[in-house]
Amino acid sequence: MAKRFKSPGSYKTPAAFLERLREIDPSFGCDIDVVAGGALAAPLTIYGRTITNRFAIHPMEGWDGTLDGAPTEHTIRRWRRFGESGAGLIWGGEAMAVRHDGRANPNQLFINPSLDNAKILGDLRRELVSAHQAKNGASSCPYIGLQLTHSGRFARPNHIHLEPKIAFRHPLYNEKYKLADNHPLLTDAELAQIRDDFVAAARVAQSAGFDFVDIKACHAYLIHELLSAFDRPGKYGGNFENRTRLLLEIIAGIRAECPGLEIGVRLGLTDLPPHSAGVDGAGRPLEHQHLLPWRLGFGMNAAQPLLPDWTEPMALLKILQTLGIHLINVSVGTPYGSAHVQRPASYPPSDGYWPPVDPLFSVFRQLSAVRQAKSRFPDLIIVGSGYSYLQDFLPHVAQHEIRQGHVDLVGLGRMVLSYPDLPADVLAGRPLQRKRICRTFSDCTTGPRNHLLSGCFPLDDYYKQMPEAKFVKEKRAEIVQRFQ
Ligand SMILES: Cc1cc2nc3c(=O)[nH]c(=O)nc-3n(C[C@H](O)[C@H](O)[C@H](O)COP(=O)(O)O)c2cc1C
Image (tube, rainbow, N blue to C red; front, side):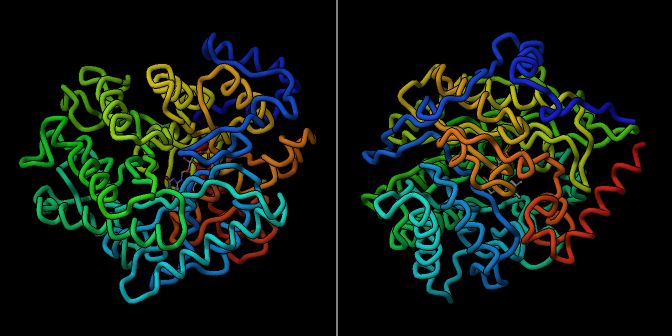
């Protein structure tokens, strides 16, 4: 049976938790006291707009749009709760596909030429703002972006089956997802069309009133995959210049067509070779020695791909900074091959694997990536990821990282699904509401992995009452039993 690790919530005091963090790495730390009006409440100016705290809400999909790509009541509720959090920055809302074949699932929002997308997205944004203002006063407004994506290899636009649009052949992902070796690659002309679709989607976002768009370049989706298209022929593959070309062309297109619209990039800074469950259920990297030197991921050491290589990620950040892009959201890993680092958790989703190491190591991997970026580019505004696993001590680590200047904004993912008021409570100096703290059961991922909607089934009454909740809970019991 896979080893289980002591969950952060079971540490009795911040001091005891700090001791454990120091064992992981002496530079990993947390503050003993979280101070109302302290570092997390420091204002920050982003592209000329000042926000009043250091919380950001990460983009999070609910697999709950209509088949034609519009939000449902569930989507609207989630966006309202993002607004109610009081966080100063809303990074993207959720991944919105720039075209139909780029959807990650048949319920993902997308730019549907038959709909009035600007009105639909404008209404969604207004819901978020009105929920924010109801709690924080009419003069308060977060800085809000829309995340634009094409799901590439992981596109499922029509039904539960993958309809992959790939940039290059990845032997391990091809095998894992049963993709034929002769599966066609997207042509350069098709990529150029996708570039134009990103620019057109940015125009829609601007008309809908968003302050910025995020060009999603993480989590193994198309723009991220292209960054590691070492073996792709033609102008979008091979050397660094070619692999970053599509991202930079999209940026140039948005600059030309949407003056006044700001840009952010959610960037996957490093990764691990794809993992799967070993006999004991714990994650193991798939056999990859025969693929060395490793040319199948971005920011990975070619000789030892379990280690990062920061050379190219830092070179890309430098280019982005030169282009005037100052807003970066750092992520690490992917939900498809290295979920234990991308969203560190106590429990795996139903198709996943048990954490191979204490998830705190994975949190530290996320924090270290941000520290790398921030120390080399102090003028960039950097949002960090992977904090939810810290549970009761999230505010303690968050304040520590901000205070030390390691990160500018603390991004909240799963935590905000169960406990959207966490930022408000922390900023007001109220104790955390323990019953609402995300315990990383991964039910929010198990739902979609079984083609259901996502939400916090264990803790949020809204989802708890849905018929899906029972199914998801049973799936969790199954995975626990299987490896006992
Ligand atoms: C249900 C769910 C939906 C997500 N949707 C997106 C998304 O649309 N775009 C994105 O960039 N990341 C998405 N993520 C990843 C989160 O933004 C975040 O990076 C991840 O959960 C780690 O942060 P956390 O530890 O605070 O949860 C999603 C994660 C979950 C659990």
